[in-house]
Image (cartoon, rainbow, N blue to C red; front, side, top):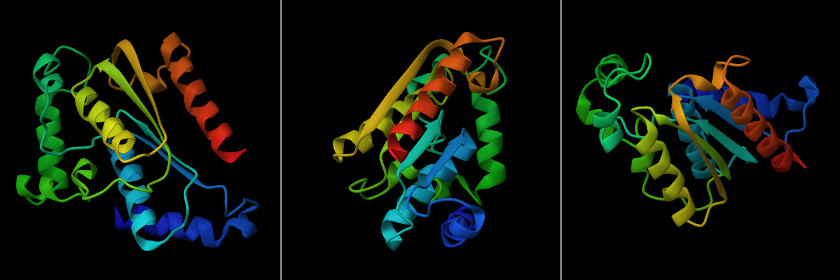
Amino acid sequence: MEDSFAALKWVHASAEELGADPDRIGVHGDSAGANLAAVVALMARDTGGPRLRLQSLVYPVADYSLVGDSYDRYARGYGLLTRDSMVWFRNHYLRSPKDADDWRASPIKAASFAEVAPAIVVTAECDVLHDEGERYAEALRRAGGRVEYKEYPGMIHGFFGMMPVVDNAMNAQRAVWAAFKRAFA
């Protein structure tokens, strides 16, 4: 998480050298990467920048407590990401399950979502992470943030990268592209 934030600060500081606009920056990630993107967006808000135009979160790990009905409904048999694999990932990422209470691991547990970057949140219906992605989008919305929430029915975790085989992969990628295009306009 700290490395991700350091990378964001470096990109911002080096934007002109990279041929980029330092005032038009966003973050994107899927799954654990979306967890990092969400945490970085909160850190950017809390430290006064860099100002992000968008946080793009594709089936984010928003709560390492691993709670929600989707953890029961889609525990196994719906692609590679299972409840057991999420327990394995948590056990290898956090020092202990108690660390899931820290917003830097579970961004849904942040004290406030006010004034965090606008977001697009994409979820897959048949994914153990579905409910926490939906809850995260709602938390951002309740705090007054601009949030575009897209749920893809029948999709499993990882579908975002399954183009050209899966039509909704292209649809989801186009939705994210359009969100960045609007954010950077």
